[in-house]
Image: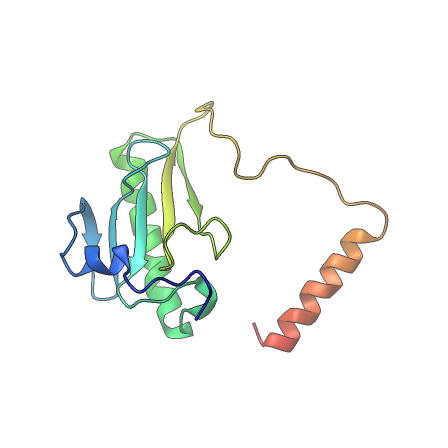
Length: 145
């Protein structure tokens, strides 16, 4: 168990109906509900019904059902909120406020002012991109990812 694991999980409580939430979609494997502190109205969280803390913990057979639900919710949020597009994000441990895997689906409009997720951006120097790419390829091979 990770050091940030908590005994009670608010998302499991939402799943079980112990904590009220604005559920906007669900199926056998996932449940989607409005984020209580949205970046923009229509910001939805999609979670697997089974408790897994991070994307790396999610069994391979549950990856497709989760992302099928994320895809479905992305289309619904874009349509319902008359958005130009959506931003889909997942934090794992760092910036993960609830230790239950969740994917953010955020409606976006051009020039909506959303900043901060990927700023400041930088550039690679010298041989750094080759070294970084090699390290990632080696990890993919080593981990069988």
